[in-house]
Length: 113
Length: 114
Image 1 (cartoon, rainbow over the protein chains, first blue to last red):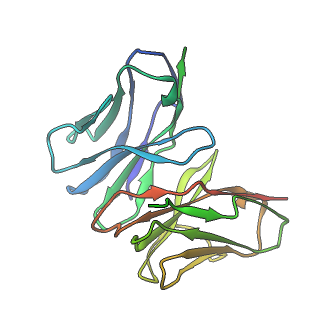
Image 2 (cartoon, helix red, strand yellow):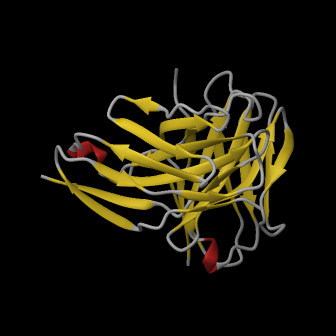
């Protein structure tokens, strides 16, 4: 069974600075997707960024980018120019084609003014 | 397009009762997944429905069941509630989870079992 680990339960960053959230996963699969989801306080979970395992190029979405290291089974999220609205729980998730999502335990990120 | 909606948003039940939660997916989405979110266990997958059929199932006891209707709306039912069933229950929809892999989440139903 696949597992997803997020080793940082909580993190904080000053506004406008850069922060990196870690995620590692365990799988024997070769084809899969990886995701970062954001869950703001008392708000809905939304997709931040996703990466197809067959793509070597790291995904980017505006201030959000990933460092995908397939051999190391690592998928970290970098948030540049952090904003107060980035304060949220961040979940890393793994999905094998055609099967359900497996989520990590989450990292609570606080952006400080 | 309207997002994923879940009703009710909050629910208080007592041990031994049963509860039904409802989820309306985004229009056109045929896949609906359910998750249980607790502080201790995080997000755990319950089941996924596609075209009225359960396609994937997580590791939960048989007290947890679900169904999907022809309009893709889904319900999940928990019978003989236990204190440990207190959680946020999230529903997520996708056009077809097996092909188009982004899930869109609803706001959740917060269930408290007393």
